[in-house]
Amino acid sequence: MRVARRAARSLRGVLFDAGNTLVQMNYAAIARQLLALGHDVEPAAVQRAEWRARVRFDDGLLARPGTSTESRDAQTSYVELLLRELGIGDPSTARAMAEWRRTYNSPVGLFDVPDPEGEDALALVRSAGLRVGVISNSNGTVRALLESLGLGRHLDFVIDSSEVGVEKPDARIFALALARAGVEPAEAVYVGDLYSVDVRGARAAGVEGILLDPGGHWGQRDCRLATGPLAAVRLALAGR
Image 1: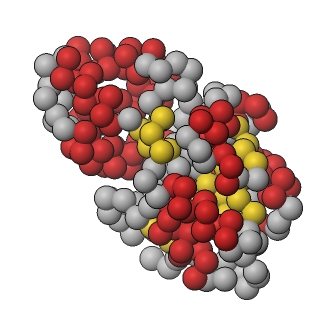
Image 2: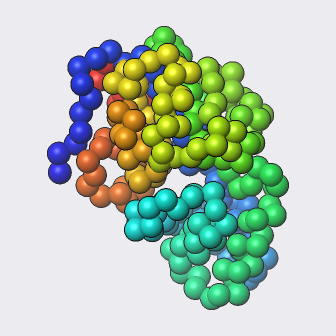
């Protein structure tokens, strides 16, 4: 399939998602809770299962346009898909894990571990003299979270969906970020982990989306793929 390419214009800004991009889900915490429920799995196995589950989750979002990734139903579905990829199918575990996730580390939730490449990715954008920001579907906590993880100092701004009243894939939230960055759509790229939300949302605003595919599970897509945020930045800079 042909991969969409940007118009010939200088790159002036790189924008990022937060969850599963600059910040990872706490796979160790999930493994500990599963062990408490009688399922002995390693954090690395949870991570690999989550890589597969996010693709299945995205399929569901594509099938139901307008579904909020922040809704309770969407978050419950995400947990169930993760468990299924781990080979855990009993409904009682699914219910217990969904309830646990709703109360774990409130109000931040499970996304509280910095990605190993996150800070290097942001620093590389900075060193290239580009604008750098975050667009996240969140609950008002993402800015403080990024600051607490030491990532906020590399950012020019953070757009949190709950603060601006619109969430990805709505093109308006990308337009807000472009205005904050002071760049045109063709002068930016957006790095995220969900095709329907991040790539298609960015594209609707005229921005190229780079999709993170750490496990190689997305298959052929009409966008560029990268194994992590640092690889995505290098890919974006290579095309300047």
